[in-house]
Amino acid sequence: MKPSTVLDPSRAPSRVAAFILGALALTATSAVASTAANTVITNTATVNYNDAGGAAQAAVTASAAVTVTLVPSAAPLSSPPVQTIAQGGPAATLTYTITGTANGPDTYNLSSTATPANVSAVTPTLPANITLGGTTLAVAANVGDPSITVPYDNNGLATINGIGIGSVIVVGGNPYTVSSVTKNAAANTATITLTGAIAGAGQAIGTVVGERKTFTETVPSGTVTSGSSGTQTVSTTATSTTAPGPATTQTTPTVITVQRPTVTVTKLVSVDGGATFNASATAAPGVVLIYKITATNGAATSATSVAFTDVLPAYLTYQVITGRFATSAATTYAGATALTEGSGGYTVSGSTVTYNPGGATGTVAGGGVLVLFFGAKIN
Image 1 (cartoon, rainbow, N blue to C red):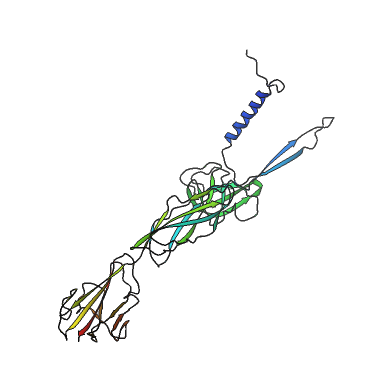
Image 2: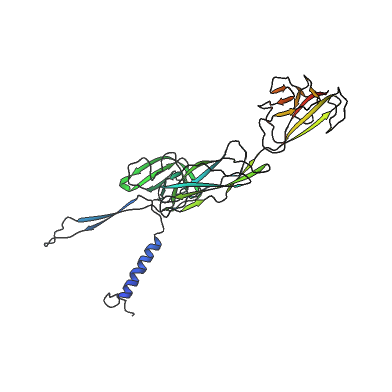
């Protein structure tokens, strides 16, 4: 029979040390669950003894308390979809979702950059920081459970590690809304009741329960440098304020296309009272010329406050009650809407004809036109 092995510290210190280290390693490996920050772990030792006559004496105890600290973790950020905005119009609004993955509440500093291409640089506006509650499961959560049990956070607040009524929390990748928080200090736990039952799959003890929040960021358009469009490429980062400050940047930058109107103008003349128009013509003195000026917006975004100014040269005299306008290039002079000098933004002063209608008429949508007609007689 093989004799049993006895570890004698005086004879084999290296073997004893190896045994102890191995046991510790096994213990550490098995402790894979995560415990929520602010949990107080109290361990009490009891010593019983008798007096010289063998009578039992009152036991004595001693306790040691350990408060679990926060282990910071990067908080995943969503990537808002691409947008198209008009130069000079309302800023782009990006809505982000951020989810806590730490074992307790943490604050994240928010920063963002907008990289311009064919457009002037701009500065995004967003909150300076955001705080997310966080805890972990103290009891496994099973599918169908209406609530979860988490460690007590050692305070008398109505929230548990920053999570309160109305908070959205994520357990195992699924979001839930909190309907109530009940603390049980004696059991060193708290119950978080949800508006919907646990779904998807059960979750083990130690699973992180992270709060999810949204925040918005606005990005001005800037000014397009050339052509009809440019882009602002936005990248936003959330950085934990707890050392070592892990950070998360949105996976896919958000591209904002900035468009501006590009208006071109053509001018044609008619010598037959507006029946036909050409780029040039011949006519005798006394003939009334009908001019057709067309402003075309070739871009996708609207041009506003479109206005015409035409200074008649020598040898021409403006003819009253000849002004007309249209919003289609196909509209004939006869079918155009009459203008009255001195109203509706149509004025004639000396040899200067001006049409500045403003409002809806003065706004030319992308691909649209605004046409001005008027007559002048050759002296």
